[in-house]
Length: 77
Image (cartoon, rainbow, N blue to C red; front, side, top):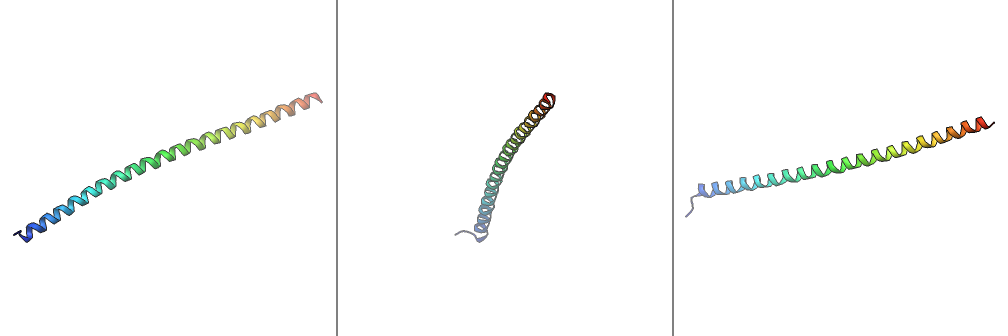
């Protein structure tokens, strides 16, 4: 028959190895999640920057065009 201490030692070793395996898997999942969130955040920030730049450029072009028209009207008068 098995010795009680041997069975207890085997059970404890199995439990610890299962916990270590679960912790490694969990750490990998968090690393993947972190990388995914970081990539999405970076892409979102780049898209926002492009939109802000386009909007600012359009506004500046509109203001410049209006100023030129104002000057032309003033000169025509």
